Image (cartoon, rainbow, N blue to C red; front, top):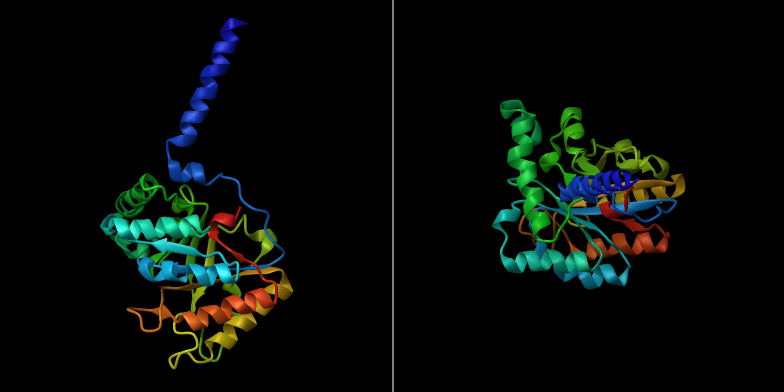
Length: 267
């Protein structure tokens, strides 16, 4: 009996150790909220945390939660990391966007999948986790992906994000890849979003109407729709979504009772 008890304790210790060896993988199995009947996932990429953090009051105004995908984490200053922690403390999710924002397909073609994981993924996850930011999701830079890379990354992350764009004269509600039925989210390792930068500006004056219509479509069909942008500002730098346009999107979600979800909320 004493031998059996000792063996049981040893197996329990081994199980606990293996679950914590890889913090990112361990976080994949963390508890998540029950999904609503429909939703919208808003994501923002790169290293615009000094602009993102200014929008916390706007997100709070509409009880909205979003996901920020960060690259070049090793170059961030302490103030930038503090901004990410402030966003995390406000219940937003912080995801991984790679070490150097490399295009996955090109890098794997040239160096192989193991080298890609070693150079672009593992160091980023480790640095983020060491800083107290545990990424459950990864967004492909430039939406460069394939099934082989998806399967490799899903051993570390619970979900991924790719991307697609609109064809000429195509309505956003007809862009089928960006909609996922709620009951299929758990089985959908890579979710596909579409870009909404410059919505409501001269460059894309009709996009706000398209975004709202796509959200209505998701609400009506019991689906989750995925969007991505970059900076949140009126003039950049880089690709950006104006705060007024963001507020219109958040206000419409609230008006039609379409919850905003983070990647951390997904099973």
